[in-house]
Length: 367
Image (cartoon, rainbow, N blue to C red):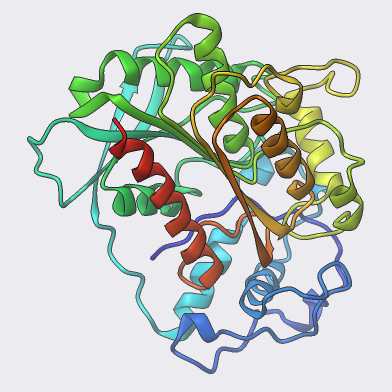
């Protein structure tokens, strides 16, 4: 299965990128047995070998540091998805073909030009079949970088594993469009899906939201906005390592301050580009743990162990439980932020996708 991931921070690291110009040397045709070249870094002494191999391959691209690059340049640099694909190429194994049909639509909502969405429909579903569940999916990238292509493997996996239509939303990015642009676009796209489910061949009573990182934040924020506006709520929320707080001094921010792909410096850069007043103004749609979380649907939270956002994922889960919400959270060991889309090389990603699909199908089947 193809992989998807957010973007790795362009920083110095204990890993010696200059000693691995071409990344790990692969001596296996089994992607799950790829081994790294160097030792475990100080910031992740227990990192999974395949996870480290991905990071080594990414660092071999020698991208500029985040302090030296603009958002536009960042969006056009090599991304971790290409690092994983490079590792797969070295094994000589071709990526499996997607089991979905892909189309596009410009929704006549939001900004003047509308909102582009990419629609994934499982090939097992007859093209005329109606009433399929639908997942409105939001990509990651700190509300500043990445796009539908970067996270396509995650969208494909969710569609395939749940037999649901996935609508992946190309929301506007900062700093060109600061808060609440991405949130407004994400809500507008969700509202369109709710009101036009029949056009998609989907069931208006079986709609979920899902997303990774900044998209994980949006997957929770959109139902909060729907509750405020009196719009039909989703039946499930899948939040994968969501941005849930503006506190960059949390225990895991300290523990993984220099981690790759995500660290304190990169998160501050993201906040500064999308929420310029984030340090002085509390915004419940960004700081989800400060929001009124009552009446939300069942929620699944997936976190990576080696991730500054791990702590706030736990805080969000506790706040949801206090609000009486059915919430299940799991932290996957040995992996970093953005592991979810790496099912081609990581057993943890396979298990995380399976967990996500099972939880979503439980909510779909309840309706």
